[in-house]
Length: 122
Length: 107
Image (cartoon, rainbow over all chains, first blue to last red; front, side, top):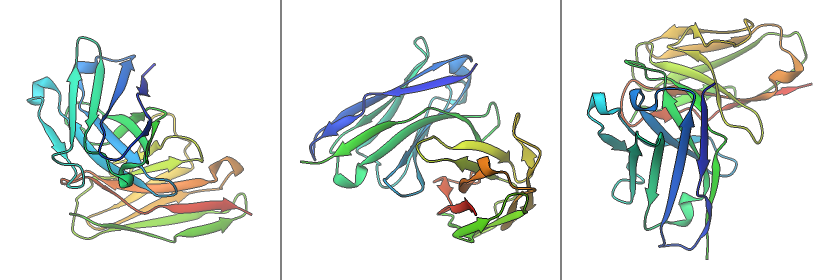
């Protein structure tokens, strides 16, 4: 069974940093691109960025709103994807989900974690 | 950036009725359009991928159609458990984007 479990959320002051983790199980993690999506309270999902599989170069892409502040990385030996968030702003508040692309050549998001809440406030 | 618009914003429906939700892209995206269902307090769940392909385990009353700029999600014979917000999502180009959502409420 595919499972994705996010952790690391919490209350953080503006300007500080936080690192989220997404621990995967039930599939060969290294074969999949991993994506972070966030959702502000009462709003729709917003794509944050993703990291390709090592086979596809392991490169990353980001939304303009987080580029230069957020970094996505992966540890295939541990089946974990990370989201390092620096210089946090109040508008970064929301539930952060990790999800995966549905396989080689695929671009839909087939399984999602339950999310972890990040609150940026003084 | 490709903008997705959905209509209607909200729909109140009686059980067994048919629901139709549309998603329009600001430019042609081929079939790179996917539909998700999200219930309160839960993460989104994939219903339909690439415009019309049902995802494994999704009830057959959910179906999708369309290509290019206009797409439709249809729920045949709505059930009470289908009360949720439905989002479309494009994977044609970066940045990936989502529609604003359609709330389906059960009368």
